Image 1 (spheres, rainbow, N blue to C red):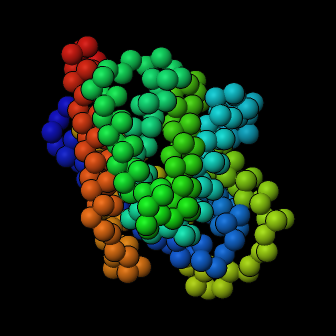
Image 2: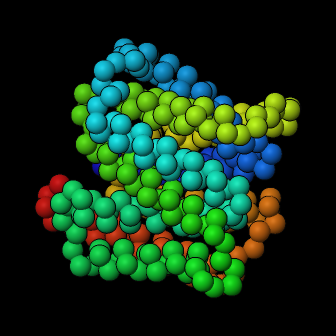
Length: 292
């Protein structure tokens, strides 16, 4: 592939991670005063409308029977679990801590693919997975000073998003990416609507409305950029730059929320990222050897 295209893909991937980090900032602010269900419902409704328009532009329909395909439903379940857990974690856990644990998601996907889908994973990648989750324990530190029980919500997020990504692999290719995205966001809207009777709605003021609009705008921009990155550059080249999200999250956490990270958290984050990068490198070498 043209090196210039890979460079452009790296730039897009890094930009998408910056956009997602800013989206997280808006969501963290919004979650301080708005019910979780209301945040999910409002942002998902706008997101669904956006992707429904993209589906229509590509000449497809959103409301079709394929939306009830078992793997689509499994993906939607993972989307719902991951999203509610993520918003809950953002409301009470430092942004950098949430982002650090979230970096373990590629390792979780690799592990689940090996355990449940028969994907071949050698001992080196198993070692990387193990070390990555040691890093997760260092960040969350259960049973130690500084442990926040709410931090366990990030692990639920990782599990939910891993289910989403694994199920995505099984969805028939006749279904477009925009259709899958629209259905996934619609499931989050249904989740938010289902939570509303158990929470007290709040009429967003101007500031809260700006936060919700900001979360939607930057989240949509991030989704567009990450999709473009994987289509422009080689996946094995651009994917490691997903870890730049932690850098942006640390910067926002430090300068916006006044958060600080101790050495154990930083060491754990470094172990997670190092394990993930090694796993990417091993996968790339395996594909190259297989001529893929």
